[in-house]
Length: 119
Image (tube, rainbow, N blue to C red; front, side):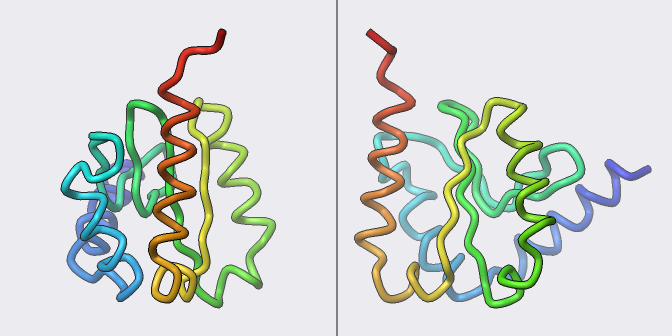
């Protein structure tokens, strides 16, 4: 039952992306970054990731003002995702809107690190 609710909520979120999510999705959806396939509003356990790439396992979160007040929730969520092998990148909404190239560069570097096998 809970899984169905999470899936239903993810579908609703996909239909109502924020301005910053729309801006980032414009780049992520076209495999612009290292040819990696990102999905938006992806259910992972009880959580919904803003953007996720299953290989390599990376989650990109865009935080609005409400996240300043829910740091404990975000920390527990990050721990859950990390335990499942995901690297979590967080950006503030205004960063995505005003410094898009810098945000994309950080994501690119993280993908590069994760796709390169350890020596």
